[in-house]
Length: 228
Image (cartoon, rainbow, N blue to C red; front, side, top):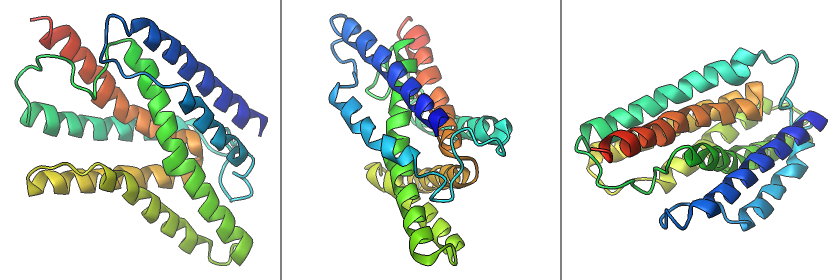
């Protein structure tokens, strides 16, 4: 449990550094997206759930029985795969022309490293840590693990629908279908890794996606397209 809390505090520190950095950049980047200080209060909601991982039948963040390739390696690679697919569809195919300025989903580097690490942490708190822990904890308490697999798959399916439904684009049917299916698939794989390998595995997968989709694509647009 102490290692869960230390990991959470480290993420707090990284997010705080990013917020300070962002406010320092605001005069030269008026459109910069900066984490508001109220966001840190919201992240405190995750702390009680750090104690419930084992009670809900979930691995602790640094559970010794989970190999690092399952906690970091495979999730990161899978996330990079989803990021490559998004870059191919949304940038290479749909927007091959250079951007005239950084779009809202991209931020200047190296600030983007801090912003999207904090953003991934926030998303994983509300999409994974809180709902999955609650559902599985209630299931184990109520049914005493007699129907655990049913609760696991119900939790995976329910938590995997939220993000793709919230982010459906106003576009052609095939693009809406791609967004729905790819978003659901990524969230479902994240939830599966969360159940098998813990919170850091799910976070690693999202960070792999953000590395391509938000950070490296942002570097390309900022340093290549806008430099021409």
